[in-house]
Amino acid sequence: MTPLHGPSIRLRPPVPADYPTLYSWFSDPEVVAPYDRFVSETYEGFVHSMSDSIDDPTSLVPRFVVERVDAPGPLGVVGYFSPHPVLESIEVWYIMGDRAARGHGFGREAVGVLTDHLFRTTSVERVGATCDVENVASARLVEGLGFRREGTLRGAFYHHGRWHDVFLFGITRGERLPPVAPG
Ligand SMILES: CC(C)(COP(=O)(O)OP(=O)(O)OC[C@H]1O[C@@H](n2cnc3c(N)ncnc32)[C@H](O)[C@@H]1OP(=O)(O)O)[C@@H](O)C(=O)NCCC(=O)NCCS
Image 1 (cartoon, helix red, strand yellow):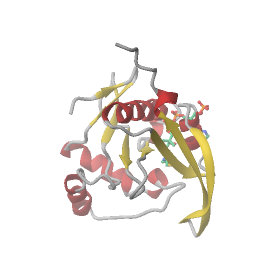
Image 2 (tube, helix red, strand yellow):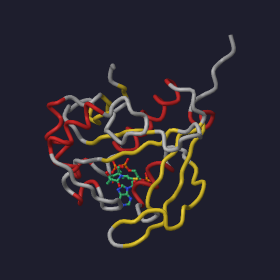
Image 3 (cartoon, helix red, strand yellow):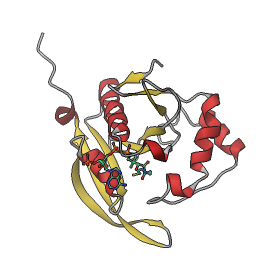
Image 4 (tube, rainbow, N blue to C red):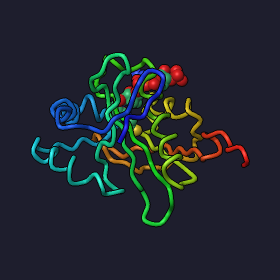
């Protein structure tokens, strides 16, 4: 697959040379799970899932590495998955593993590029996102892209020793992409 481009960042599929960096992020709860459940796995298990799960629509495998157009090298990862066995919806997720790269708009740009890609390459009408209600950066990221807060799932997520409420966000095709001109 050819990379997907935004003004400052591009999304490209992960390659084996990225795996040590990605694994180091996924092994650090302060990086990947400040508002999430932390699950550790071996490096071998991580590498195995990268190659084995890519065709599974429900997998949380990283689908794209985020890197700057002018300075290649992984800054983060984004993914998408089908969260429901019946409903036609795709959910996006995102982690800026390089903490020095946070707060510069790269995360929002990456999720915007991914969302547009999903609308262009699938027939779904809605792209969703969820986050812990305390994850201000994550909520602001998607709100800035036009995702609407559709509700709150109460006590839906257990991590850091207690139950957490979760915001449900969604954006529809018409809200994100310009209408196609007739003819
Ligand atoms: C959430 C995350 C991906 C944001 O990435 P980022 O590149 O820093 O995001 P951006 O720079 O595009 O900023 C997006 C919005 O978040 C805000 N923001 C960024 N860091 C913030 C922080 N620490 N606290 C509050 N708001 C913050 C920005 O100001 C911006 O909002 P605004 O334009 O309305 O002011 C990043 O913080 C991260 O990887 N967190 C850990 C993993 C995670 O929580 N992923 C989401 C799981 S649902």
